Length: 308
Length: 262
Ligand SMILES: Nc1ncnc2c1ncn2[C@@H]1O[C@H](COP(=O)(O)OP(=O)(O)OP(=O)(O)O)[C@@H](O)[C@H]1O
Ligand SMILES: [Mg+2]
Image 1 (spheres, rainbow over the protein chains, first blue to last red):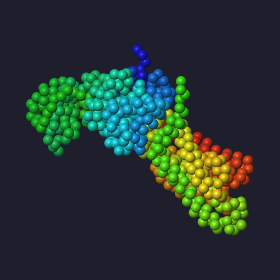
Image 2 (image 1 turned 180 degrees about the vertical axis):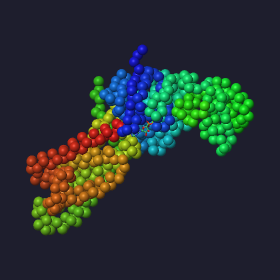
Image 3 (image 1 turned 30 degrees about the vertical axis):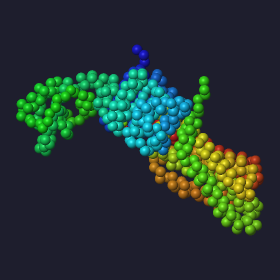
Image 4 (image 1 turned 135 degrees about the vertical axis):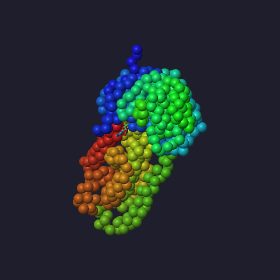
């Protein structure tokens, strides 16, 4: 086996006393799409910033392209594309100027920047806005420009921190398609997202973080198999004050999870679970049997109220 | 193989791109202000000063316009450095966040600080050259010494730009910037030796003024145009200015690294 593109051992990031990333290990293979999932504050962006060589490690080792981040930041960053969680665009410059200026940071000749920029803008459907001042773009368009800009140096590894936040569904699908094609061209992707469908669609492998630690890892399929039943029965009840935990459904399915707006029953056979619910005389206002998804794994692992 | 463009030059290209949209307004502002002072003070105050021999003696026997003209190049550079090294630096971290964008590329804190220095040097040279050209319209101000005066002005601009950059880098809010203008830049403009010799000031204030860069730049530029600069005095002034530039640059670099790499 060739060595992994990214390899983290015992990675720790502390801000004063506070431990944001707490001793994590992971490896990303060349050509893979790797995802970080986790609730707000889990430490995803902090990890991404360490991979981006802009956040010194508090402990552990992190190697990218076989080089150490603490000694070879410059060389590593030259081959990275970075889409940070918060845009860092030059708002007073035009779309094209943003791309050219950024390309110059990598010492790409101006004419070449322009050529690549044209091609990339085509790709994210922003060509007509090439001469618009960034300040006048919508939030989603700015996001698309950030993504475009990260590709100007034809990176080997692309770091995408919540790339599709703020994008409309159509733009998200365009981006997904774009990322598939990059992956097909051999670009390695590391993505954080709060959209489970996105993670399921894009990631070959992912880790779920919570409180700075990795609480699960694997392919979307294997995570679902490990942490959830095959099917999920979703029930909605009329809101009622007297029993906040909902009707008693103990013993039905493998696990029951009560969420603010609905109750989830994890069972390999959802229809059978529904029949059992009905047999108890419990009458939901609506019910739905579906296949288990990554969302269920996420809810389970990052600890919403569990009722066994 | 082509040689790599130095990092600071790449960052300066960014500054230049931003500047493209506003260069005319900026250059005009740089010229209009000194012109107003030259007309307002040079002609108004000058008509009073030039009549009394005692005042003329204190100025070293020259007309008031000849006296303040070289200083106006230097104060222009100081004002330029102040506008470009306070709010815009904070914008790079807080508003536009451009510095974080740059730090995601092969470039680092040294390139950002170096880019600012390079860009400020260029701006100061251009602005003080423009002022020098305007000064040549006045017969009393016209002198070959204006040419080395440009270098004195640029050096002074840098001696403000780099320490002010260091001041701005760690700021989380822009609260200190207005105070910096009010309590340092404007007082120096008035008391820093541009409009009258600092020997007119109380001794303690003279000491303060001699520590800060403006007076050294003014004395240097004036020494060039009035032709009374001794080698050792010139060297002294240049040393102080360089000291401020080096200290400001080194400190900026350290603070920039600390703020970017968290
Ligand atoms: N510069 C900093 N100083 C102090 N604490 C920080 C700093 N940056 C991040 N943190 C803390 O580290 C923790 C992890 O933050 P991080 O941004 O990595 O979370 P995240 O998983 O990306 O969350 P989100 O989904 O909201 O983006 C948070 O508790 C945050 O408050
Ligand atoms: Mg984040």
